[in-house]
Image 1 (cartoon, rainbow, N blue to C red):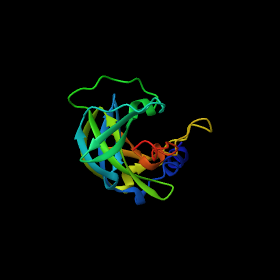
Image 2: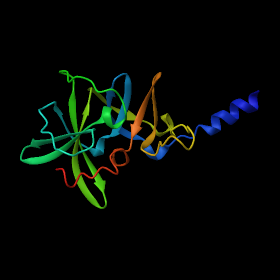
Image 3: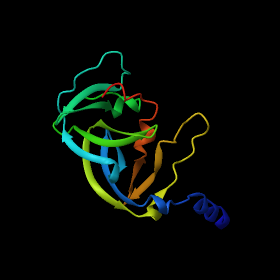
Image 4: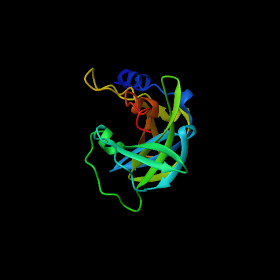
Length: 167
């Protein structure tokens, strides 16, 4: 029995190269984190101008100090049920890189929580769900106290979204 416990411990590979500061936020009851260096700013929810013929999770664009920025509903992108905007709803403006170009993109979240400094030995690889479930967009699973934060690679979350023609 002891050998099985040791084997289970070694299967949980920690990711020391992922340690750092993460902005945490919530979508429904799930908690997520973004590397703080990808976050440009956080703004309260503002009206989004719809753009025709975009995927259902693209809410449209906003004008942020003269820059037109595409806005993604992260709940819709993740296949979650959409929710009404509340006073806690925010748009996190992130910098992503696609095909060698850097873009600013807004992601709508239910609420921003805090910035956490997560040690590398508290971050594990994403669980394996088999070939039918893609977890490439997950940097790791951050263990904070008794909770788990899903740490996202925002470039991969938004990869495949043709944003250059929207913003």
